[in-house]
Length: 473
Image (tube, rainbow, N blue to C red; front, side, top):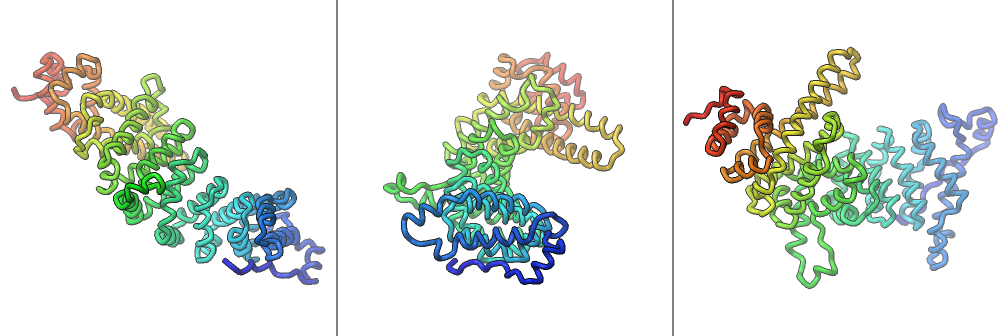
C-alpha cells in the first residue's frame, strides 16, 4: 500500500465548544474524543514520508516504539473493547490508519497493537462486517501471517478466528485464505517450529475453524503438502522445507500437550476432521512414519495420561471432548487396514482396558448428570447439563465402535495371552458386553466363540450373565 492513511477529520471551533460543554466523551464512556484524535494523528505521523526514510539508521529507529506513544496506543487497545469506542474508531477511519501502519511500519510492538485493536473492534458484528468488506485491509492483515513476531502472529490469529466465527463474513475470509497458498506454509511453519503455547493454541483454533467451515479448503491443504513432497527434487530437500499438514499438527500437539488441555483438544479435533475424508486418512497412514507417530502419540495419551485408574471418574467431564477425538482418530487408523507393525493387535491390548475404563466413567458421569437434572429447575443449568450429556453420548458411541473394532480383530492366541497377562478378565469382559450390547451383538458372539475354546468356565459365566448370547456348540 503506497498511499498514506487518511487523518481523522479536523476539529472545528464548534467541536471545541462542544468539548467545553461536556461533549468530548465518546458515547456513554468517559473517554475523550480529543485525546483519541491526538493518538491517531500521532500514529499517522509515525508512518508519514518524513519519518520513513530509506536509510539504515532510520529503519533501525523505526523498530523501537517511543514509550509515551506505546502507553497511549495501548490505552486505545484497552478502550477498543468498548463498543462505543470501537464504533467511534470505525466512524473516523481508524482501520485505514491501522492499515497504513501495518503496511509501512517495521516496529513489531506497534504492529501487534494495531492488529490487536482491529481484533477487538471485530468482536462487534457491524464493525466486523465493515472490516471484512475492506479488501485492501484484508490483504494487509493476511500478510501479517508471514510476520516473524510471535505477538503479532497471535493477534492476527485472534482477529482471523473472530471473523471466521461470524457467519455473515466467514466465507469472505475462507476465500481470501484460499487465494493465498503461502498462508498454508506460514501456518504449517508456526505449528511445526513455534514453542509459544498461546500462539500454537490460537493458530490451531484458526485451522480447526477453517477445516470445519470448508471441507474443500481442508482437502486442498492435505493435497498441497502431498503434492509438494512428490514434486520436490532430491537435491533441494535440505534447502527447501516441505510442509505436510499431519506432521505439523502432531508437532504442535506434542509441544502443548502438558501445558494446555484445551489447546490439545483443538489439535485432536483437527486430526478428527482430517479422518472424515479419505484423503485425510491416507495422509495419516500412507507414510509409515506419520502413521506411527500419530498412533504412538494418541496411544500414549489414552494409556498413560487421560482417565487413568487412579483418577476420579468425574475427571472425564474435563477430558470428554479430547478423548472423543483421540478415540475417533485411533479407530479410523485401526479400521484403515494399514499393514503396519504398530497396529498389531497384541501390542494394542492395553487399549481395551482404557476403553472399558472410559465407558465405566462415562456411565458414572451420566448418572450424576441425571441426578443433578432432577434437583435443578433453572433453565440455564439444564441447558449446560444437556450439553454435557450430548458430549458424553458422543464419547460413549465412539468408544463402543472402537472397542468393537478391537474385539473383531482378536484371535485365539491374543485372547489367551490377554487372559494370561491380566489384560482381560471376567469383570472387564462383562463391562465390555454391557456397553457393546445390543448394537454389536455379532461381535460379542464371535468373541464368546473364541473364549469358549480357551476358557469354557469363563465363557459359561458370561453366558449366564448375558443369557441372550448363548453360543451354539
